[in-house]
Image 1 (tube, rainbow, N blue to C red):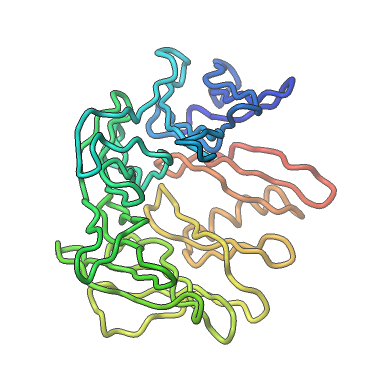
Image 2: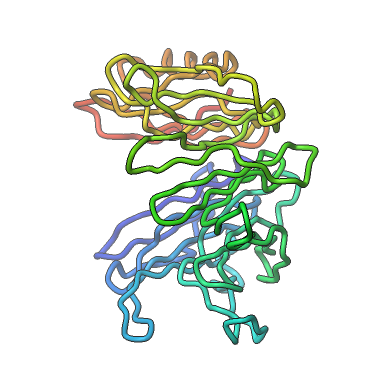
Amino acid sequence: SGKYLAVLRNQDGQTHLVTQATSGADAHVVVTSDNSDYFIKWFEWVNDERLLVSIRFAYTRKRVETVETRLIGVNRDGTGGNQELIKPKNATSIFGSEHYSQIQDQVVAYLPDDPKHVLIALDAAIPNSPNVYRLNVESGTRSLVQANPGNAEGLRRIHAWMADQAGRVRLGIGGRDTMQRIIVRSSGSDDWRELAEFDFTKESGVSPLGFDSDPDVLYVRALHDGRQAIFKLRIDQPDAPRELVVADPTFDIGGPLIYSRWLRAVVGVSYAAEGIRTVYWDKRAQAVQARIDSALPNRRNVIVSSSHDGKRHVVVSGNAVQPAQYFIFDR
């Protein structure tokens, strides 16, 4: 809502996740990492009162050293303790007891109209074949949303999933050996079809990046004049050519899309180009950025978080001689 911040603070070799009101009062330490046995990997507001926090740590499974992640839920005011959300069940599969996932923080989608749930990918049934579940961020209960097709004919095992902005699972990435395959389905269909298949040792292929507010528009990264560029294509029109969105004649555009939560749309992209370069193609986002740059001239100003109504934004600002500072911008 823009009323509260969550920040990481380092002190005495430890990292503390702190929540506080944007007025500066009402601060709470909700998670502390010793930066030795375990680390805070990321954190994200899931609603106004609850955060998801990913914890990374070293572990040994059957004499094999691994890196594991766990997902915990914490309340903004520190009450209720830190709840580990993924718990092993006694259900059985062809492998016996349910597999307890090594990686438990692969959030597929935050649900804008359902703040008590997220979509998460877990290989709880078959190792290395994640299904998608709807996870309750308070109780940890979950229900199956999308099963992994495994090695079914024509749909080799999927290892990563992508949802559209409405929270519907629409894309899967899988393959075998050096072959990669991408499957998709149109917004009004339950049937999967192949979007692309290629040998990544011989060609770069395409890399799906995310869906736009139009649920049948998908952004991808692919080669253009020898450089990686951003294109968009229509899932519901398989024969339509893809449309170039932005390219750079000198640099690959290898960074992430910029998604505006308040506009519910993809508005631009950031990428490395003698520093970090940001390109907005959405005029509404351009207007907000212009106001910020006018207020903080001769700096690189980046919106890192926004309230749902788009009225308040967290901005990190700095330049070669000015260390980064964080500001609240109220439109």
